[in-house]
Length: 261
Image (cartoon, rainbow, N blue to C red; front, side, top):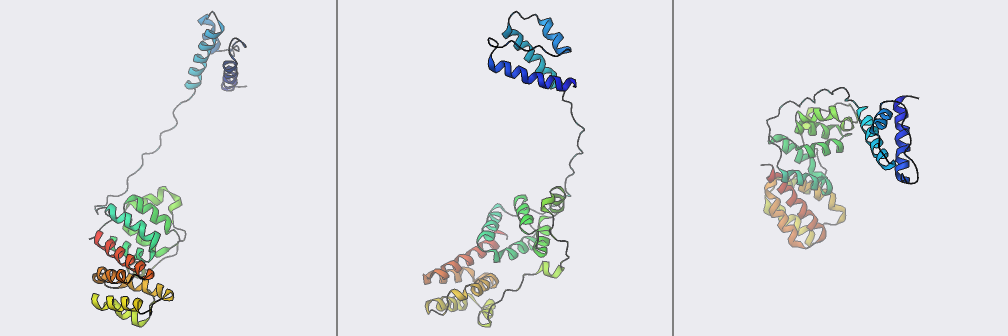
């Protein structure tokens, strides 16, 4: 049995004796060696004193057994990126988008890139994890993350891509098309008054219902940003539940674009 093992077993015996008390059990004799010599030299007159001297000697010996391991290589910093971080309010909005209206996330990420921002570290980590298996959105995240993104992936394998399939630069740089019928598609380029009257009137006259929700969401995600607040106010005024939800979407999209100006 090695000296280290002897000392380990002896420490356990000391702990047992201490829990029972020296009035019920004498401190165990230490194994031959420096600890035994030190305790013998102390000449403690009573069991309690001998126990304290022995515990101190064994604790010092156990601690002395630990030596520093080899030093690790210094962590290299990522390449500098002079782009400013996206504002904290924009990071908060991104979390609301992915939780409530994910149809807006593509535009949010492209706006970050186009307006010269980069993702804050917390958003970068969450977005990399969220889009591990989506090549196009992951590529946008890597662009918006800058030099920190590949550095982070290199140190955290769990954030690596789930697939190595290549994606086109055009797909990365453009918004995906969202389906909608021709009568709604034409509203994307019209003025705020026309869009507001058409949508609010559709709800008030009962022409829009639950089956139309998806295409109306698509319209508000792709219409001209300049019409959003007026359209939101008109939809809010209808008092219809579905219209109120769409009003929230319009206001959220307006806010996300404003925060990144």
